[in-house]
Image (tube, rainbow, N blue to C red; front, side):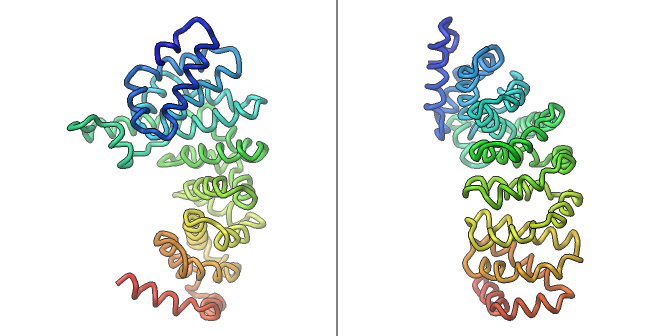
Length: 331
């Protein structure tokens, strides 16, 4: 299958890329096998040298699948200069090309290192040393910065603002991953006006798009007071966060509550406007996931410090009793 990528017939090359995508999609073991068989340099070369959009799309899909749960594949994709052609694809007028490029970027630049990847990556009886792991993290961190240098963060924000729904969803995932442990990308996000488009997606997107938007906003606010203030000053920022407290998934609720917490810490003067958030935060305390309850409790605490009206709201909606129950259950 990997050898077929070198075939002189373009149709066979595209079939090979499609087969690699299908074999690697959500399959860590196959991702490892295909990467070890030498597929990545060939896929990147196909991405760089193909003149037609269909071939580029097949290559981008395959790269995204190979990298989704395999850090070694990410490092190899970056070493073979996959980043620049993927960023160029974001400018395409073709919706499928934009989506495939954003998905591939999202998977290539995330320095994920969880148990699934370790199990998928390491042959029996072996494992990466700490030094090798840190080296790979550095390489991916360099790629995140290179994305900024290529104006990729700004291009992804434009896709969130103007793209079709599925492109918005993929672009938001790439933005979220671009800002993990990367201060420069977080600055670029703020300078490019990223809060507004992501708040719009958080309000109107499907559950997956909302999850990506919430994660991107969460990551953007880390050590970035300017972005925190942008969210506070957004004309409907707090209202949108309150909406998803009631209707979002566990992950969305956790990040929305945490975002309210961060915003309150960043600008205590907004406490008077947080009364509308108290009922939603109390509901998350009652029914949310453990992580969401922690963030909700932190947001309530910050909102109630030196705010009599918020304390009244908390008491009115049963928040005191709910906090007590959470403390008892934790014990």
